[in-house]
Image (tube, rainbow, N blue to C red; front, side):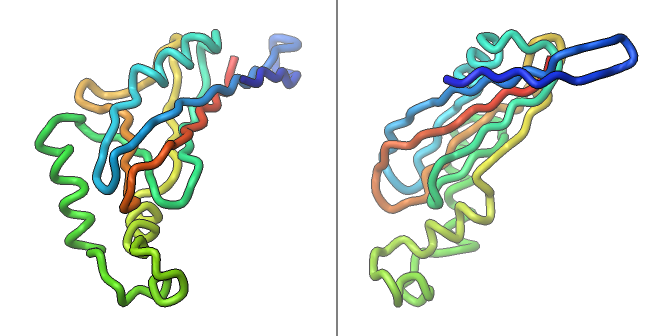
Length: 155
């Protein structure tokens, strides 16, 4: 956990921008395994004490992704399914030719979705829609121990 303070001058005098950082550790089961991180991120934001700012959620690693979705069983199947149609497992990817590890599509799927997400904070709460949750998606072919770094910045 890291807490930092940067001074910022504004029209009201001296104010402070604070940063707070913590991590979420996830044990995934393999390709297509999704986790709802919303409550864990909400707890980190609450612990930060920040009322107005941004929360950045970042997956450490190149074969998993984070984003927002209505986290429900249908979409929990649909998202990995559509990614497998768009970028199917194959031995023809350049990554496969170089490494022969069976996860070229995993890297491409994770790159398409992206490793990070930024969510606004207002009144000390994440600004998310009613049916909008923060998810982590494992794109790799095997289960992994994942670290998701959450950095909260604001005042």
